[in-house]
Length: 347
Image 1 (cartoon, rainbow, N blue to C red):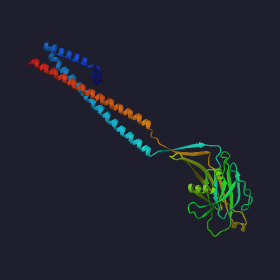
Image 2 (image 1 turned 90 degrees about the horizontal axis):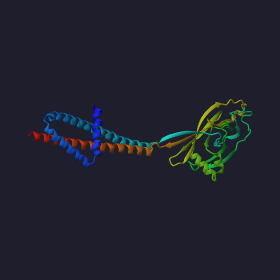
Image 3 (image 1 turned 180 degrees about the vertical axis):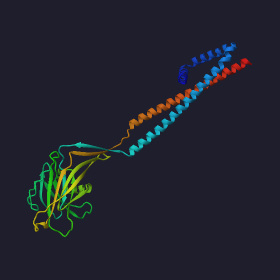
Image 4 (image 1 turned 180 degrees about the horizontal axis):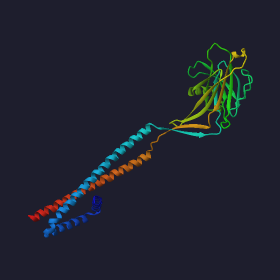
């Protein structure tokens, strides 16, 4: 019954708002005629006012209830607008990091910059499928089939120290698990520990074609981290490539690596053991290049669409509340007018 009365009141409201002014006046005249007719029949007039009064109260009650409901909806809509704008601003300040993996068959050959110091390169070989043949004469010069180049440049951090680097072309065939195996030796020194520094940069060909190789190496040392491998061990370096896209659209390349160290069993004679041996292997970890990019998840178009929907709800709620108030005032005036006529008739 409540739903039926609610839908009936809403339908009467729509019919009254859609009728022109002339129809409203005609209806008022008919109501007046009904009132005059009701005054001529006192028996019906005694029974009709309570029924009309109860219906009017019920309609007024549900109208007020509807107004409160729509006011509640308006409050929720305003809060939703505020929350949406706040979330949008937070997402603009804190972009989400997107990580994707690109699979390749062949990498561009990286550059391996070694700083051996007084150590001497004995051999450099490319092998496939992780197969490293046994060492025949460790500590003695062996085959060198790597593409290498030596370069001297001033340390970019001190601007005084001269650095001597050996640049070696890295592996390319990731599917064939190509690796580069290097062997160094160093005569016995007064140091308790010995190690060789190295760093990795993304392209050996870029180094060769660079117009200023000295400046190229200074930039690489300023941008990339350096690592070490120590003597008396075989250090296995597995590289992975990470490309990061900055906010301005520029790209930076970073190498991540996993290292494992294996002890070298020195079977040389006591006279030859005075030379410290270094062994290092460079290999790609997997055929995936990790690409990192900051993404702003806030979509301005979706926010605009949401705000439009919220404002439309606010407009409809305000319009309905206004019509409800007008209808209540009209019903109240009509009721007071009828009551005044009844009192005049009795008097």
